Image (cartoon, rainbow, N blue to C red):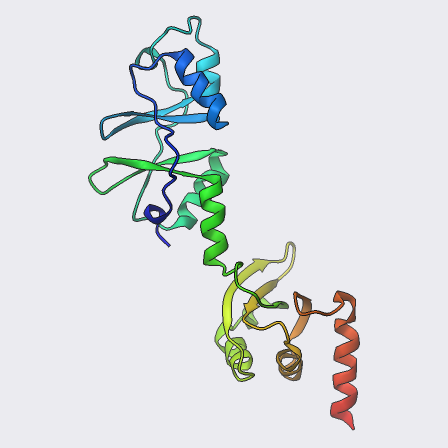
Length: 220
């Protein structure tokens, strides 16, 4: 999903000729700690609340201020994961966005980004979540997908998380059904370790019990 599809509708821009006082009012109104300074379609940088509070005179114009934040922006054709990385690294409230011609087009905020990622991960769709634990070398999404889809179940999203100080990973899978008993049975039959399930209408503590019941059934 492109950043350009998630531009904020908020008017966050300040002009170089705006005063420190007026910009602080906007900071307080929007509850952001940084605001983009824009002249026409030219992005000039981010002015921070700290910069504004350090000004000796509130009538000082923004163009007379020294910007302490790095000159950072992203392109509207970049993926939202790029924005996520930047926001996490720099702890920004928002990120300025430009087009291929480096013309300013707007900002993406933390709220915009969370909403976009939520859609990308299909979190708005109903369905169970399965967490598998496996060796990193055994991580084959193709094989897991074949098992799940053979139970007439569709995978909505996946995510891989390395387990600290281990050669293992957690593979998190969201599917389009809440009743996943047949899916779990198939995964167990293929010796996959189901670490946890969510939103499947069952007690999280009974995964091992269900596994034991399946083994007993198969041994009959």
